[in-house]
Length: 305
Image (cartoon, rainbow, N blue to C red):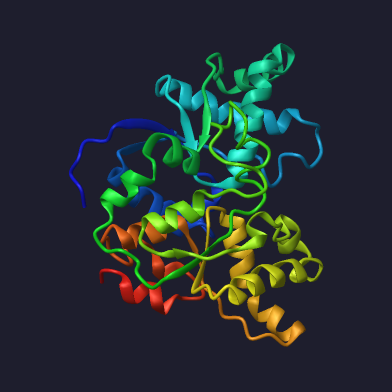
């Protein structure tokens, strides 16, 4: 691991998925961040951003208050940008933050709620996605410089999903780091790691999101199309930045096989796991490859044991 001094410190919001289904995203992001000159300082005593439950009843205030509390805690740690690796956390926290900053009445209501816990959010912090930070603060050339174990022969289908680029990727507040319909950053990450990024049309198609968790029968056809396109492209793995996309596309392949007569067994990994392997880091401690339900024999064969 590099001993270089991090070039920039961010206040890090791990989000709920980091404690469960997306633990391998969190672990691998934490592993590769210092190699890219990024220092992550966790928000102290962070809470759920409300992405899953904040809009169920009660209007918008409960959701905004959950976001506001995280930002109030972040504010206490200094006037730094807040970064998250989870697509849903980013969408909810970024949009909530912009609402609080731009709407005087909303800020007032949020701070009234926060006052019950002796908190207040008075700053105007910037909420950023980890992929945007890597694109704008690091760049693909820096990724290439860190590669000591290029992923030669590995074919990667970059599946961005819905929430990482929509609706903020092409806005000033979102960092203007890619397009909505045909984002290239995952392909660039894979190529920088020495892998081959295959042509993959459904890169921003919906996997069903939380509907897949509650009513998978309604979304199996969506996931089937994503996996089929990756298989048709000759991909060895699908790579994604989104914890929910990773979970859905990975865990429903058995049900899809039973329903549609397919024989999918396509590994679905995080971009940060690819980076950890390419940076010569450990397969378990850093890349967290052991946490994937469908294991990638080809990627694991390339990883440092």
